[in-house]
Length: 492
Image (cartoon, rainbow, N blue to C red):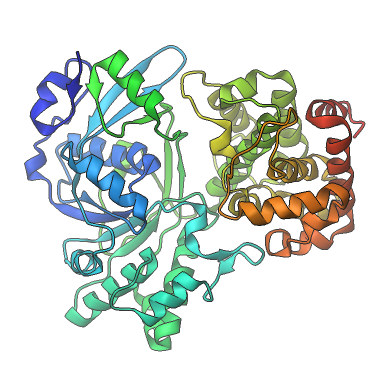
């Protein structure tokens, strides 16, 4: 017997899960959030739920927003359960469930007028985003905002009814300026180096297409704090829905499963005010860069390191990849030999201890994270998670054998079949292009590096080119297992 999640059933749900102990009717909106996906609901929404449970800051509730067709499906599923979400924290020894209630509205995607009206509300003092690494219109090679992207060009020509999050944010800022209302703070919660700077560049870049004076006003008046966010959060499938029903007796349209670990480090730059999130574990610091550098290079880079060999070896779950001695040893060697040595020091943090924590998190057998999720969107992730470490090493005259192999494994994965011949379904927005280049690279590895929009100057570096060429040739010659064995034996 299961109980369908809703405001009316919280008493019944409370028998197996913790539920909001605050009065949800007392909540008022303070934040509009674009991208109400699993990570947001396992991270920012959980921190706010914790804060509301202390009895304070009830004027900082969430209003959801989105710009993709998929966002409407999420909206409908959440509205059907009164915008409540079941969050299941899973560790090897135990699992716990909680229901969060900090979201009080979800705006209809595509209704630009309604979104801009909400953004114009003086009560909204923060606009936050989790729109994935690929949602910021960044040129992969330069890592700078691309003002020529068709979506951005559309918004520049339709500034009163834009389609992107940045177009809507800019329209909201314009409306507030016209009404004499203080600008809201724009806070990215995505895994991007300098995510505040990247967001600022996107909003100002779009503004510059409309009016240089407007761009200057945004730069002078709008805050874009940098932040580092972390919590492993798999996609939701019927597996998670069934586990929730079986283990907790709760029927949730879109539950979130995640690890118990979470971290949020934020630059304290909120001129319009902010919730007191330091009460519930958020670190506010003057400079986020060391923390995000560590996380993106070691954790996200580590995910990229294990994703492609595991995918090529037909391994489904991430914890199964960590149980494979070759994959786990490959991760450890690449991290210790090539990634960690080029990560700058982090205050009060031992990088080797941090990596050991990452290994334990990757090996969590309950989390159900998939190799396919880690391998997703390499064309946006490799330039952020792997290529910068390789570029740092070649600039210092150091070996890149392991990082070049990581890149070669990505190329081999994008060929579209595993080592056993199983077809790999499209797993990147640029899959057709990547597959075409990977097929050319089977005969000529340099064809992969011809994607200079992804590799930048690294594509012309003789050390990296030679290491990549040899790694990919070896993969095609002897396969993934034997290639990893050679690398681990220092004979690649």
